[in-house]
Amino acid sequence: MLVAQDTKPLLVMKLSQTLTTRVPVQTDINGDIISYPAPSKLRQLNLYGVPENLIDDWYLDQGTVPCNAVFLDYSREEWAAMSSPPSLAEMKNKIIPHSGLIECYDCSKIFAGNKMNKDSLRTWIKKGIIKVKCSG
Picture 1: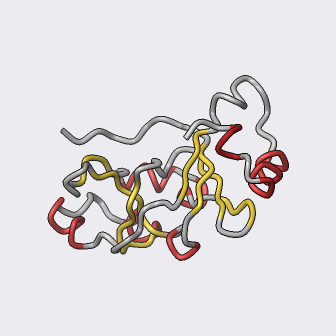
Picture 2: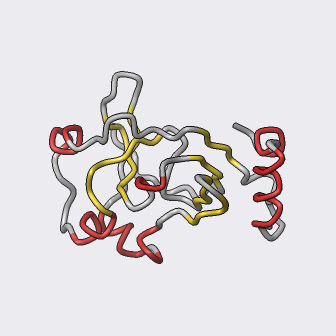
């Protein structure tokens, strides 16, 4: 069963910059798509939910990219303009090879109830302690 992506985690991820404007989907261990954003959801998001660059290849995402994401060869703008998503078969054919995240950490708990501090995130990345500070 497909599930809409509606949670708003605070994820810090390392990925190829060329993927930040592509559409993320979740797949199971067999490579079948199990979750994808509704085009209407991307239309509602500021800048179509594109992750924000923190430093180098590290990005901050607040709800559009799950840690087990792969990316489709559709721009977020193209996706948001669709009245309905393509079929699962069409989506599967559009998965960009080797497009999974390199690293991904959920920093939601550490900032729960507090204002998120991007400078702290950058410092943790530079020091190599982001994994220690945020759950993986």
